[in-house]
Image (cartoon, rainbow over all chains, first blue to last red):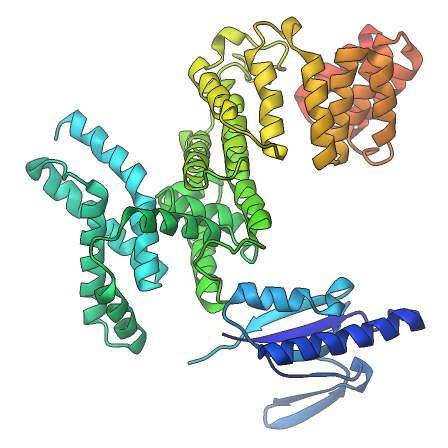
Length: 113
Length: 402
């Protein structure tokens, strides 16, 4: 089963330098562990929603706007594509992600066929 | 058809429905197909058994008919997934050994109670696939339109398939939390029935029987775990009081005031024997042991509050929630006097400031200590916090008597 792991957190929260460094370290360790296990296909961190641009085409006209597609309390800060045996494995992988401790992780199964 | 055969068929249905569905889900991986084929098998049984008599092993008969129906349906279907399922069905041994079938039911319980499903869907799915209630019956039990319940069940089944929720008994590291989750679903099912008022739909009240039956199955399926047995005993003790807890005018009757002659002695005896077989304790086992003290006291005055206080002491150790601590305070007050109880109540006052029972308990203890002004304050606070008519009447009476 393939899942998209959306890593969401409130961008407005500024962690103390020490905690922020620990988070970085833990995130790298998580990536390495999941890469080695072969459950993480790829993934990346994303820039803040202030750098986001939305695009819509209506009646043949392209509408471009600044900002994310929806205003939410937490924003998508990164993503990972996981290849897991089942949801229980995906839950275990997500539960080990350091952002799970203060943000929210969303698992979305790929729609195939 | 004779009444005997009718009753036998009903008993077979209750006992075998979950097994047949569970086995068919494992064989086909398709929940809807499994339910439809189980349904077909029971219809076939209704047609054949009145003439042929009950087969020697009704479960095996039903499973084999359901499996053949599944094969027929899959053969007629042309898609790839159906072909794969067909292969799995053919390779499956036609006489599945008993332990495997029991494992299927466990798999089904844990899948229905998976935390990735919404709680209300877990309860509904358990009632549908394990207990064999129809969608219409479950809708009535939860007071929602049938279409709403049908949608809820369909969504849950789709999520199981689409999100990759595994059909299996959780591995050792997940088992404790998943077992807690499954027990919580059964307890919720029970309480849903227990809190239904006396005149409520029988289906609603029947939820208690289903929850007790399922807890009994879980206990048999997991003999090494004490909590399923604890939950079973706890529900039996509650259930034993069903005729005594509501009076003729529909008012709730407190435990002390209940007519104990109305308590169901068979339920109590069964609960006691379930508890006696246990060697380890957990939250449900301890709650059941506390309920057993009440259930076996000949009169309210005979209640062994010292034992109950000791049991609460143990319960607080493993489940230190404010409500459990408040209940311990009540038990201590009954066993060792109101001032000791009051001190314990005050320890949880900050956590439960908005809970009327905290103030009602405090008021009662202050009243017994003769501190009338403080007691009156607490009764008033409790009155502000509850909307239950019966509770308000009780509290007002107490306040007036000060």
